[in-house]
Length: 395
Image 1 (cartoon, rainbow, N blue to C red):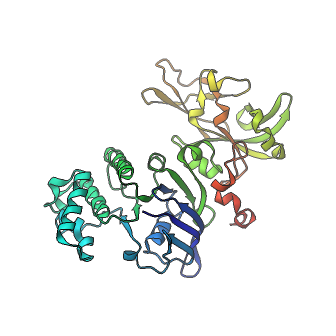
Image 2: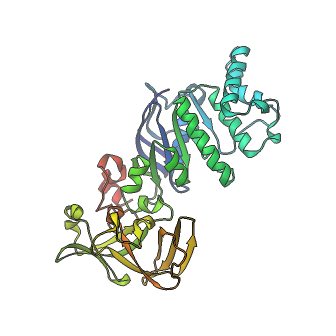
Image 3: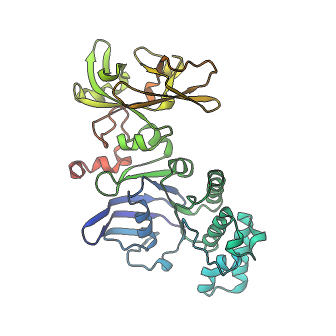
């Protein structure tokens, strides 16, 4: 096992296309870190630079105490699991799992022991003599995992390993991967575009974007901290299902405190007093109110209790989800708005409904896709893009 350190890592294609910009990241020994973001944000390119499958244009990648920029992939002490499994169709499961060890001229008995141990961990002992074409998608994925495990590497690298599986099998395999990491405690870097995978698997998640014209790390933190304190509007919108709602307006100081006023949508909400110091410099200028669907309730109790924290919407569409329902509408400004609240059979459809906000899970952002979180900002070290200041402002 080993820590992985990326320092000012970037990737430029054809001398002009900047795909990944100045990634700085320290992954601790035994940590499970997930790179997540939309397509084209540079997460797979970053993983491939760590693996040695993409040349590093600038910066350094270290695995353990070695800088590996010029080290061949086979000498980096890593094992990679690909999206398409990359199994040899003419080989048995045993030979697929043993192939890397055979190339390293490992003794036959040691190969047999390692393959047997990995097969037992993954529950595929009865499949060792089959060919890949005789396996289901889930079984092939386990074989690919087994091929990585037998190498006993310092670092596991996963590149969208579950994207070819159906929804139910993805959940099962995700649990198996988490359990496997807990058992092996090997440093793991995992790439996905699926936020649910990121939130459930990672000790920390690295949220990347391409909206600034290049692959940029927006925030690095635990899944819960990123959910509760997104660094900017992009992170808030990307993480969370259903996605965060946004209402446009301004902050105004009135009797009783600082209010968010969204006149186009008839919204007037009192900001929490503990956040006022962060908001004072942004009075009377455009901002966005970010409201998670789960931060809404019909009843003003507990975290929802308080004055001037309501929004009235028309219940256009109701989706039942067992213990909760999703209430969807279109605000007067034309923006979609959704609330996830406790289910009840007699919930009115097509009528105005007043909902209360949990103000500890409501956010205020500066204008624009990457506007900073003003009300609940994260610590500076968890949001690298914020630290870039003016350098990124014009990107």
